[in-house]
Length: 396
Image (cartoon, rainbow, N blue to C red; front, side, top):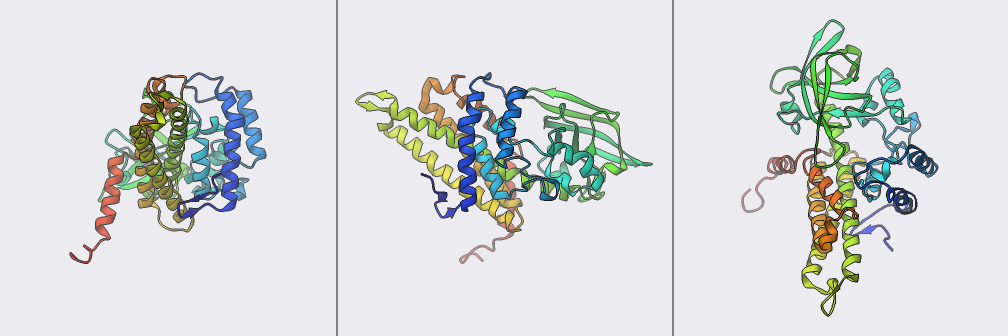
């Protein structure tokens, strides 16, 4: 029995209960529905989703990021990590955890908007009546929001006029609005502002980009798209801070969801090799198999601890930028290796579509790029280390 004591980091009792509750929910409620769906499905029938959400509502597992004053549960960062890890243990993985049973919610940065913006855009997302996207990445790059944003916005009367392109934006075409980052003044650094953009604004177009798995991503083209001045999110020129808040908040549970998929893959592989006959025993007796299991277990323990630590620091009020990069880098790269090893241990069955492994493999390949590619996070981590290290005892 896992008591939540992860090699020096012990989850609080309430989060152990939450974790175990989600595990039962995934096993008893989500998987039976998932087993009836096509291999690449990310949604279930509306009646099944309604039933799952009703059960989740009864367990207090909805409105996870919504502030208490707006009827939500406002889970801590560490609690959201626990939810993300456990709810990704389904075939749809991190893209549609628990088949959407816990609901979506608006981008967390919307809660910093005006009362009107919260009422119009945030609350309907909480109620499941609206969906949203965040558009930061562009053809020129997106992991350095201060310098790479080339989409421009100019003020004309009571509106801002946007021109430019955003790339690789998930759920964009089906969303009811998006938070779009645009350059409002050149300089070093340039001024970035966040705008709330609706799909029926004139001058906006969505173009599908097919990727490794369904659903597709989208390119968004802005051609003299007029956005009311009241749709500026936060202050004019304050978009970089808004983007940083969103990125830190998103990257930590993002890492946790990848760890969840990989942990399930490793557990499946262990069950398989213990029962798969090999000469004079089973596959689990082979040193090559044991080393793959050992390497995977060590790496997952480290990735999980880094992710828990990053979430705990954010909950304590510490800046989370570098810690978010550390756990995102480690979580996605570790999960990719672990799932790859699990496929190898399963052999031909590992790539069969009756198994979730190849679906997770494709998803994790995308996760190594999404929320900033691994190389950018290495750059962030290295810059921070070089800036804050004096050279040590022998080279100070």
